[in-house]
Image (cartoon, rainbow, N blue to C red; front, top):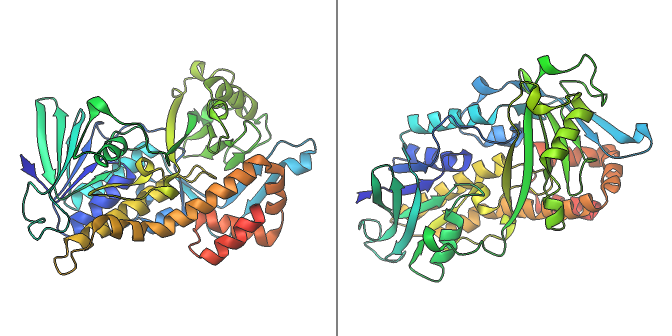
Length: 419
């Protein structure tokens, strides 16, 4: 049995954010992931100002474009009402390719002292001992034990704490749910997702600038950052300009029912690419394959328990209005690390779940506001566009997207506006 201070399932933004802070604090951290990095990940990867500010290091080496302008579009018979172009003095977001972004963050984390292991999967998780035991931090059998599947067979790892940052499709969330009623949970008998958890779905493709016609049929510029709320209910289509290509996609982020969730299809994406970019057939244009990704929602209602803390998509912390998840992943990973460090402080002997809940609360309040705003906006997008045409309100909404707003009073004002 190999012992660590913290085990982290998932080496994406949430896992790396937690591992980086823990390793810098001198803790022995092991990241576990089923994929070999760099690996492809379906994600438009627009890094907002709040995301860049939250990171502990500059990601300038992998930034491909900086956008000062955003184009919001809706379905409207009047062409003048269809699009709203907003330019800001400060950058709205920086564009990167998710594969490179994740690998860059992982390399910074490994350089900080964290370890990484490729695994086939997690077979089981067990909680042992008590958070309040005096010997808790010093006894390898007190804490969390996991059995991992590797190419060489089953291996057992232990640590006082574990962070589940393995995304919407990962096992840790459901395994942690199983620990609520039993001291052990196994992959062979996974419980259902917790009631608070919900999923969204998005599809994307990359289109090289060289494959585009001289004039785009939708009237967009190849370098426009576009959010288009016309293609499907409960979501939007997008154009995110990168260094040598456009990332185009469609996503259902606030579906009212399962049918809306399934409305983001390969057929819809192909039709959207034709309408916006003049690309007749994605697969026949030398383009990257179409890829899809589930996103975790509902995390504003997540209540941490025990010693397995969830972060990022695994905790349902994607913004249901915008579909943005990287910022929440980084902030929640850092919050989990801070909570664990507080619990390792023998002078405090804090309860790690309570510590994490306290540090996660500001993010959850913001996501709860976004959930209410998404329900109102996607029900009547035209009303949301009327709000965006009022300069002061537009400024507040864009600032919330780009910088984040932690003020409960201001969130209350915005909630009344979009309700």
